[in-house]
Image 1 (tube, rainbow, N blue to C red):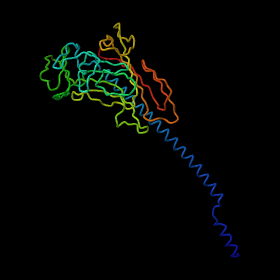
Image 2: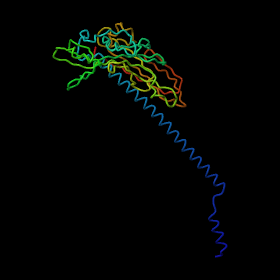
Image 3: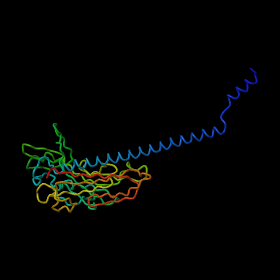
Image 4: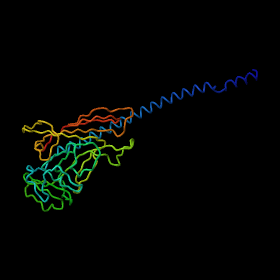
Length: 324
């Protein structure tokens, strides 16, 4: 075979891509990359949305569970059947609808109202932190802890904690430091820690700052006694609104005749409550681009309409009170 022919044939086999071929390949690659990028962005947005909805669902269910458990325990005084017979070195007080300064714990001893509330106004509850949020309901619940001090072991009483010692028709309310001065001679005696809690809505703490928007997210809080001192703790993140109505039995037939809003502390409705209805509005932490929330949420005596890009979910339940 001619040597020159072989050289030309080898040279033809080794030639590279032409400029047109390279441009076509580049365009195809860009189209594929654009498709992959679109799939990635769609998947990421879907994941973010599902994660946000899951967090909202978790917060709403947890908050509702906490409130429901406390309401079912409301008015349990360790077996005592007559609250007027509870004495001790910490005498009972009557509900006055007023929570004074942050260091005042008198509200914890107002046991004549096992359930109490404020309707869209917490001006008189000075122990609660200030807020710029729209008016919200406040729910107060009081009961004796369902577990005895010390359980089956020798009990230890902490000096400033509030305790309720109860028999069927006798009771003593005292601080741990005064335990020895509050005996009960009855055969069946139970001693439990007194639990008083105030639930309300407030902006989240600094740790709950909304990273995606620079603002803060509302949360459900509760005020309780820690070593005898009113102390605020965050319960559930992202709770935007708490509304409460009270089911009253006006003719003593053990069924709810109507659901009403909170009234003044001396109103007879508080003695007729057999159920409590709760609405919790949960809000997402971040805005959802391309989404507009113009839904109207009906919650008791309040209807709220929004025009923003936050997703929300409304939870509601009715809790039957066990201790009347």
